[in-house]
Length: 331
Image (cartoon, rainbow, N blue to C red):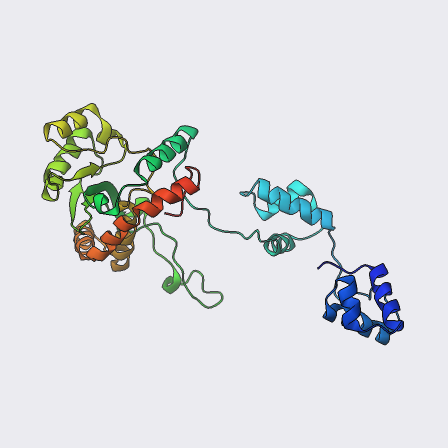
C-alpha cells in the first residue's frame, strides 16, 4: 500500500477516539492492523497526524528528474552515466556517482553487453521458419546429425579475467594478465561431433578457401560419417561455394541444406569450442607446438556425456528461438 493520506490518518484517530478497536478500524477502512496501530501510536506520542521531519540530506534532484533519467536510459541503454546526465541536464544538480546510484536503485545496473551476431529481418524470419520445421523431430534422430565448424585458438587470448588483489596493486606483475600484440600464436581448427559422443579434430590453414576446406573434410569428416549421417555446416563462403557443393555431391554427403544464417546458438559445437578454449587457456601454452598439443589433448579429453547433453539440448534451443520470436537466445 502507498502512503496513507493525512485525511485518512485523521479519520483513523477520530474513530479510535470514538472507542473503536484498532482491528475494527483497519477492517472498516481496509488498512492493515499494524498500519493503524502505528498511526495511533504516533498520535499518542506527538499529539498530531502531520508528517514528521525527515532525517538525512534532501534530494537535490526532483522525482521528475529521476524518472526522466531512467526513461532515457531505457530508451538508449548504451549511454554512459555521464552521457545520460548531460542528456537530461541532471548532471548540473548531482554527481556522476549519484546518477549511477539512481539508475541502480531503479534496476538499471551496468553490465557487460552480450556479443551476438547481427540479425536482419530476413535472418529472423529464416530462423523462425527453420525452428518450426524441425521442432517436432525426435531427439534420437538428432544424434545422426554431424555438427561441424571452425574455431581459432591462440596462445594469448584476449579474455577478461577476475583477479583478487590488495589496494594500490593494480599494476603489480603478479596481478596483471599478460598480453601480446596480435594475440600471439594462433591455430585454426575444424571439428565435428556426433550424437554418441564421437568427434574429430583437424588442424587447418590460417585462412580457408574452398579447396583447402575440401581437403580438411577429406582428412576428418569420413572418420565419423556413415550412411545414416546428416552433415551440418554453417553458411561460410568456403562452405557454400559452388566448388564445395559439387564436392559434397560427388562424395554422396547428405547435407542439411537449409541451415539458417547467423545461428550459432543452434549449432551445438559452438558450446564445445567454448569449453575447449577455457581448458586450453588454463594450460597457458607459449608456442605453436605447445598450443596444438594442448588443443588436441583437451578436445579428446572432454567427456562423451558433454556432447550427448548438447544433443539433448537441441529441442530446447529451437523452443528458445521461437520464444524470442527469432531473435537472440541464451545459448
